[in-house]
Amino acid sequence: MSNATDGFPLDSAPRVPFLPTANAPRPSTSRMIAEALRAAIVEGTLEPGAPLRQDAIARHFSVSAIPVREALRLLETEGWVKVELNKGATVARLTPAEAREIYEIRSALESLAIALAIPNHTPETLREAASLREAAEREPDPALYVARNEAFHTCLYAPANRPQLAEMIAALHRRGERYLRLKFGLPAYKGESDTEHEAILAAVERKDIAAAQSLISAHLLGTGELVYRFLTERAQAEAAAATPRRRRGRPARTPTTIGS
Image (cartoon, rainbow, N blue to C red; front, side, top):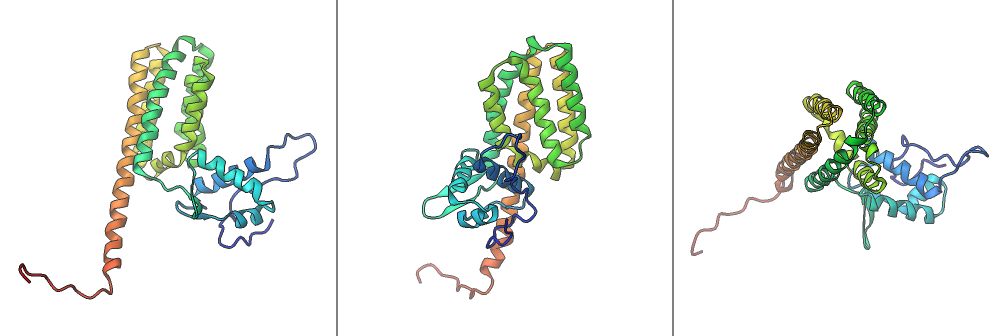
């Protein structure tokens, strides 16, 4: 594979393994490309708004344009990529409104899931949830924390035995992964989140459905509002910083008087 991709910055991104062993299951080429692009977006190698040129991606992965188009369509459905007519594909930008909405929907779905799961939890599933919670609390690496956080939540809801509900929740976890990583820029929130996880698990252990629903809802809605405020304030700061640059070099305007 060539790294000369006309500005397509994937030098440090995961490479697609096109030569699996004979006995290894081989996922589709388009899915492998999608996974590599998703990883590059999450890690920041591909920044929000970056163009995703099909020809450059195809050269990078030494494939035709067909699996690249399929990969971009998949990423678009997951919210990672934005495709516009006559403009092509770009990395989707992080927006305050999307962040809040993702967590609002998660709150509704996960409140339902935890209520359905609690009656079916066993000592074994509760021990697994406790172990996953502790692993997430100890994890300093953002990429691993995201995975451990999702595993903890998934373990809480698994006994509900609602595969379609689980699939919808998993899709929202994937869509919100970039937003979740923002908490590592807010160290105090990480500790607060871990404390909330502990309280949620305690409610599940004592089979208090109402408390568990209230706690999971507050936990998710709080995260959504925190990220919403963070992104809103960052956008305002960036706009304020850009204003002097836009005005620089322009001649001063003569004030207009009434009647002139």
